[in-house]
Length: 126
Image 1 (tube, helix red, strand yellow):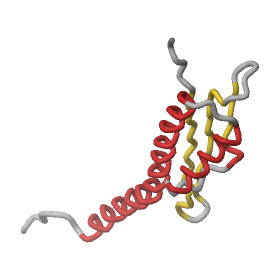
Image 2: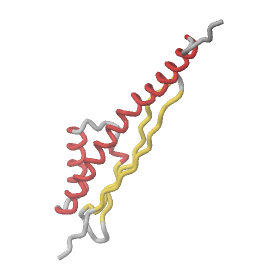
Image 3: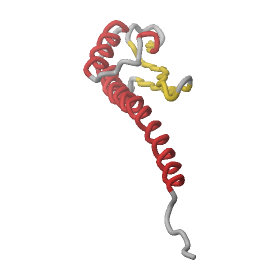
Image 4: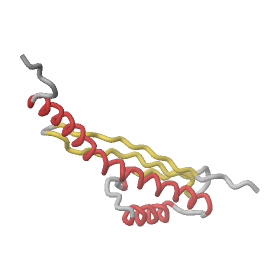
């Protein structure tokens, strides 16, 4: 009697199902994290911007809006942005972005990403 060597059809189907499951997760998470890294890039630029220039809240919101539009960042809304000023100061010293992204996965199950970023003006030493 000959022994069976290799995988059976059922084991191949199971392996392919596992691969498809993880590939689906990766395809759903990739755009979420691609956008997150775009927000990180914008925040690094804004950190330099608020450190070198004295910007008001309105100026910062306009700059963020333009940078989000050019970076194809759509999940960060105005409500997710907090601009902080120092004591007796009209200029923005800190930007906080805290947002959540929900991606549908399977049926009623969603993948959720919570992101929190901060950019603070560096104090110039003179």
